[in-house]
Length: 206
Image (cartoon, rainbow, N blue to C red):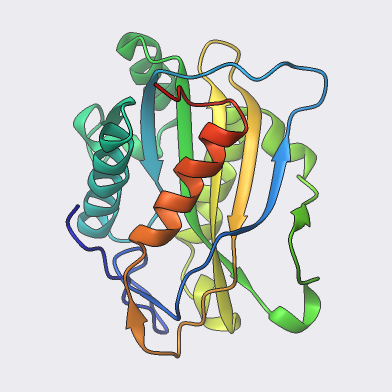
């Protein structure tokens, strides 16, 4: 896998470099009442203010999924930079693709003092439940000027949606990533996400 480095600073070009040694996921959530189903054909949407960074991140996530035996495509291969922010275009592209699952992933800003630490299950806001309201909201929030300027730490958040129902089935957040520390590769975080998705029954194991 090509190494990904996330350059994090005020005015962040997000998702190619990140600070601090990434560890396993700290929290996960699984949709209640629905038995896990392995998703075999995924589309990956990375959310970033920088199209070049977004495409590189999607490509690396796809490469990791394919290395784990899962068919995957980067959203930028299905949508232009202009259409990636249009809900109808996104919905139509997902429908045409025939994919059974959609991954949306981004760096979530966080102030550590205000967040609980330790592994466990995180609370998923009601907005996350449906793919298209969620995707539009996160895209608007993350790409707003100065989004990262008010946060001292980051977490990689990854959400898996069932493509046919457009409903959230799995969500996970990484350990805290400190943007002021030495750079390290985020490939370990992606590997942890994929490993947990497999362990929870949402990706095929063979």
